[in-house]
Image (cartoon, rainbow, N blue to C red):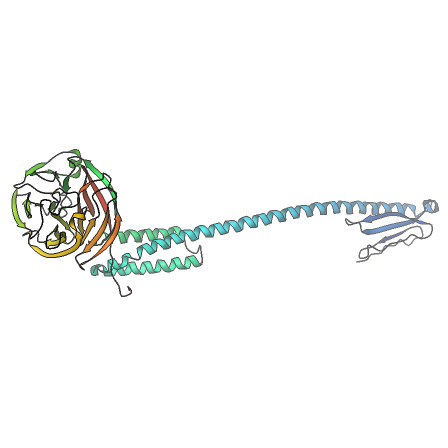
Length: 457
């Protein structure tokens, strides 16, 4: 915009330029530049030219000229103030722009961190779901729970779908609520698992030392078929030349050494591999291959029977010796006896026996040397053998009576006191009772079910 202001009087001429600030105005002959104003960049805004004061000092219009010049001067000062204020505001805006950039960076970082944390949490939930999925085939074998299991499967499927969608769009669902749902589902599944009776040995943890007593060798046990109110403990110190069995009403009494009753057996025992089952004691009769069934209730022998061809009296013991040729044991499927024969070249033989008559129901011959076995126990019809009775022992060999096959495994356990002379499984408690160098200890076991499906190769 261009504005030209001219005082139509020969005494003064005032010119204001807008769009053409670079244009130079020259005064007329006998005139002089009286005053001028510039913007912040030094560009001329207006120029005042006037004749020399001697030419018009007494002119009647001089008063108007002075008033006009004062206005021009005031305008120049206002422009300067406005320029300073504009520069100050510009610096403030620049500062605020830098602060806004910093805030945007911080918000972006916070958003990235939030997504990272949520993604990690949902990944943990996804891993938890993966742990739960293998439990479903186990539950499916229980037809009575088919409806409940179907609901479980549907719930897991829905939760898996939710997790997938959440990972695609983080923050769409409340994490805490979803986590609680998974926890509740896990507890329900674990409760159902508690009803299951059989599985494959996966892990041994512990031990828990219950008591330190007796000699280096011995046996102690509870009855896996006893009611929950019957918590009696039986204790048999040493591996030979004894007939005394001590009974304790509870585990607390056993720890405190409060004996409730003492039994004197009609025959001495050999080894440490005895078993209390449904109120009766089963043990190997001294210097024989005879198994004796003794009733605690009547104090009498209910049955006794010889194991055909079974070695005894340190013919085929475990590695530690102690006349541990014949090992009587029980699991979820019934009663068993483990021994060796000349006919099987001293290798381990497994027989299932009738707990009432002691008749052998069925026999399996393995290829594992009895003398190389540290100890053994049965779980769900599978015989598990340790490679040693000393430190560094582990469950090394498993023989399935269901399939008549074996496999070499590697399940370590902590042989805390370095010399195990008795190791037996209690199916009711899902635990291994052990006599470890004069210490009575308990190991916990973790079982898992393996069920083949049509998808398995």
